[in-house]
Image (cartoon, rainbow, N blue to C red; front, top):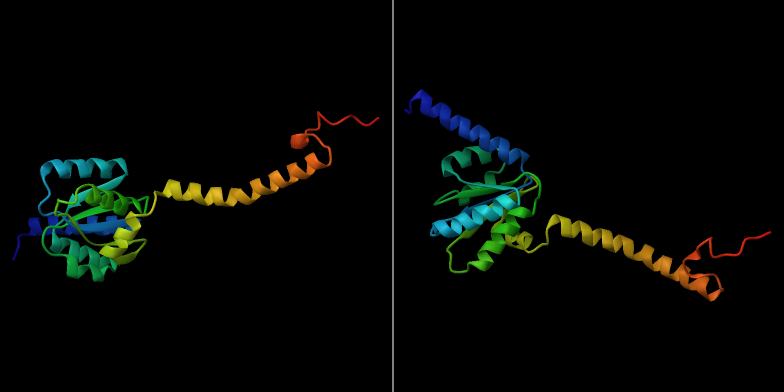
Length: 180
């Protein structure tokens, strides 16, 4: 039986993991076995730049936390060397950074095990697909550009009609003769 102090410390670690997993937009479990210190440092720097928290986790404690959060489906992958990358803001950031790292370092034996996104457990293939998506800011810009396109086309059509009818381009009130 573990002593009370050690048990309390482990319970505190599990409670902290539960809180992080509950509040996270996304989290990814990876097998980091074989990564060099240099590659690990580069990965951690890139994750920090994208506001992703990355840490090595104990499988047993993570299993308890996952069960408490309702992520029981993560249990089969909680073996071997495990690290957890969590983002509180961007659901795609951990997947994108880790996928980019794997693409840039194909010789590094670094593997995605599974993860969770917006409260749902997802497999490694889904994480890979998410990693191929552009960042949230780029996606928002694409949507706004798509929404803006019909308005811009309408403005060009109205401007063309106005030019055909002899009105000055742009429909400026200053260029039109004043009615007396």
